[in-house]
Length: 190
Image 1 (cartoon, rainbow, N blue to C red):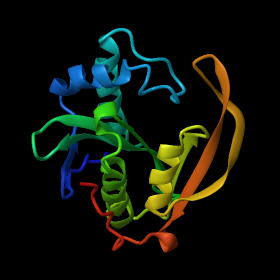
Image 2: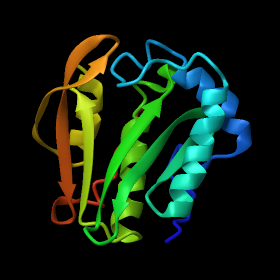
Image 3: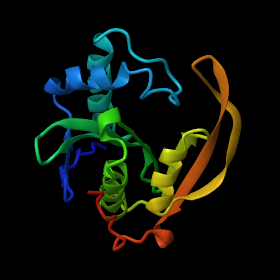
Image 4: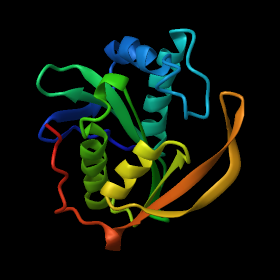
């Protein structure tokens, strides 16, 4: 089954399918050691990684296993990050959500705004019953984003990743359809 990557709009953001012109900003995002300090893979050192990421996005969509959207700020069209639903299982009506934002985008509420838009699409269009997310236990900002949009921390995966050569734990979060509050639109930070 083929998925179609949506175009979604929030008060300040446009979420859209990736294009080839996104390779350079993607490389800049994923080559930052500071941005990826809690990521379970090393920062990119070659631009070809961005092209492979874009290819993987197209393949995931074609295979019907998930989608990733690029996120632009409406005010100036600047790329601020991406968000994705992966591991989509229409039989179980479940998927996993992940996101990554440029450091300049941190602290403005963009992740919360994006997560809300993607979750609305996931529950309304894909008819999901459950969305899961994981974050490094040291990434308190990401945990707060998940909690703001309604996720519940369900447990800890002990020593499940090696991040920058250091063994790390992850928190698992879950959001069920019956717990989802679509009317609780996040108030964008000013």
